[in-house]
Image (tube, rainbow, N blue to C red):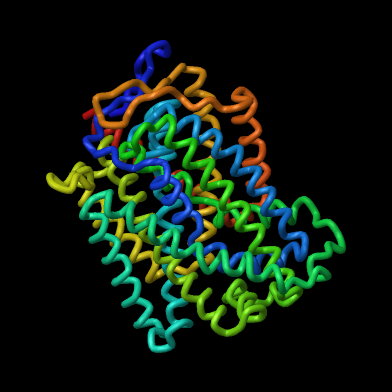
Length: 450
């Protein structure tokens, strides 16, 4: 269990996940890129253009600033708490078991719903690319094969999963870079002219939608108990990944807008592929469709690496059946958690739709980010520092956040503003999930006391 009851002067995160620390800076940065650049960027440019037109880059900049503040808080907390579970461990160490449990549920909800949402688009994208794979029956078969493949890979050990994720990250970036760079020569600058500045409410709602394209860092940090030199690796990997993601996203939006103009808002199925086809030809469109499928396949692999560790952490701390905290004696992987999470993700992907699942993922992400921002402030107040450990690669000093006293509160303000974009039904759905989680927590506490 996490050491919540220790005196503030001596609070340190506990050690001993019994997992192997083999993930370095590039491996963690690749995992962040792999999870973040999933299905969202291949589909969202049309939605953003429909809301803001040529002013769409404003929403990306707002998201980049918001995520910049948030990731500073996550990097600060992540350099102080190296337990597997990521934000679940950060918030739990800062505010106690109930807050930690809620953050764990939010992280699990985010990862589960986002994985299922992207998986549905992955299956339909393959149908567009290969007509023989189109249709509901074939889509279900594709989902079964994809979830099964990544489950088997990750059951073999975290090293193989990280290596394949790194390869998938490089492979998925190539077609996106082709559009971002090659498309520059086909831009009509008149399509980029902003006629009128959008209203703040429209920017907030659109930025809320874009969170789905930027989310992923919190899930990639779940295997913190398997990261070498946490205090150095976490902030460096986050910085490397976030700068690259922001620059790439803005470039893709501007290129697509510059090529398609007002037609971008109508290209809701494959906006980037349509932009590639209009500028470079049919071969480029096919390449982008293939890149989208590969990207989402890699995303599924990254989430299969990360989210089962969340299940493992919850089971380790007694909130889920202890059997889900089982570690394979040879591969040192949470085998039961990987299988259970893959079955759940597959079931949601088969039964759900992208839009509904993405909304649930976005709300969970923002609530989780709020908890991470507050945890960063609280851990600093309590003086929590990562301590040297006998585990290979653990230990070090906490990451130094610039303007540390101000950043968490700026992040909280931005998150609250983004949450104003939620509809009444979305608030009610989110509240129902929190109530259900709280009841589960109370039941577990009652069982423990008896």
